Image (cartoon, rainbow, N blue to C red; front, side):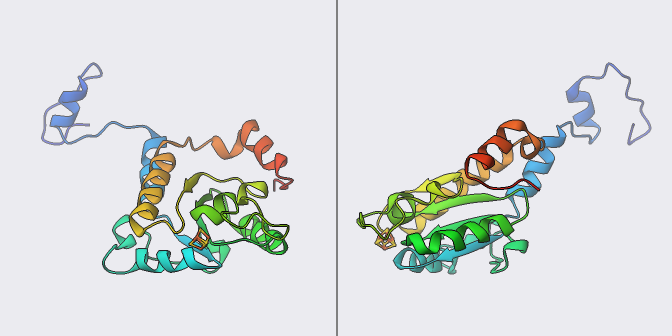
Length: 186
Ligand code: SF4
């Protein structure tokens, strides 16, 4: 185990190991770190909040600083679904299909009042929050939220991703959650 000729015994302290260039951590932490720094966004933008996301991607706000500059419009190559804008009830099944086509692990950020709750559109045709049809990890309030708020939402999601157990997606609780949305587990 030693790097420079000295021997590290089994009872070596963590500090001793660190002094020899070793790092002790948990598998969950390493996987979490890799995942949180490579979140690929799938922007599902239907109206004004989508414009704020375009600003968030621009050089000024620079979403790329989080390793998320690679937008994917194919659900198969994305793991962070950002829903931005008014979602009509007719559009609900499409959004749900996009979500189910994403591979696990996948996360969802609901951006803006419309996606979170229907916003000002308390009408027969508008979905009163996307969490009626898919699970949501982070809610970003505002009409529209500023790019700083979207960045704060991404930062919050990174925290969740870092601390998520690698076993969560196989857990009975997660399967129950998906079943409560009527989503089949494959
Ligand atoms: S929350 Fe406001 S800005 Fe965003 S889509 Fe709805 S009406 Fe537009």
